Length: 279
Image 1 (cartoon, helix red, strand yellow):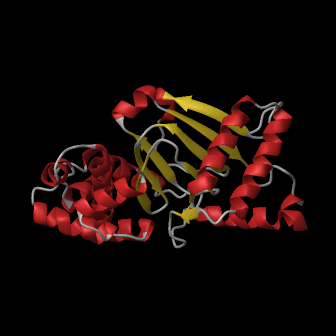
Image 2 (tube, rainbow, N blue to C red):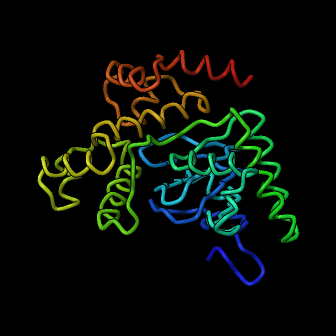
């Protein structure tokens, strides 16, 4: 529930198993601050890895899933801020002073990752909101929205072509495929196998998945695997062949080719660039 007798929106800290969520969407706009955790996120048709300190803004009815890694779940923490777009009344966003906030809310329909100073400021403000009085929570929410609206440090995540209709009966089927893939991406996965999960033929499944996600299942699986490989490259001392094998590739040349297709760089180039930027 977003609204209560004392609060019109939610500011909540989650930890451990309470951070778990499946592929879902909701009418509220959400800021999520990854205080301490790592894992894979799916936002619309975007797949990527999150880490400590990441902050995202998710628009209403944008499907998303945050899959925290087992080790991170034990001591992980997130802070969530959720509010309905009409929370401040039907005319607030029509005020001339609120035009930039109206614009950033519209942009959040694709999901926005905050970066640089904006990310740091947003994380600090969300931290404060946890301890704020109700009145100060509201002030900080408006301040947060304005800071993000004024920032040039926001990166869209999902494509604009990805649209999820509330109450879509196919939502559960898409969720089933996502969950199966995130659990088994390191193993061999055939199109015939995933098609049987939905009691479909292979051609029917391929059409269904492309229609619902705007990408082929093979592309989706590749993005999941390479996304995990990116994380291992910067956090682990394993060599490229070991990482490729752990991500479901038995052929190192195939792994290198798909890695460059997704990231534009060879694995070791990606690792070198990342470490230079974050040293």
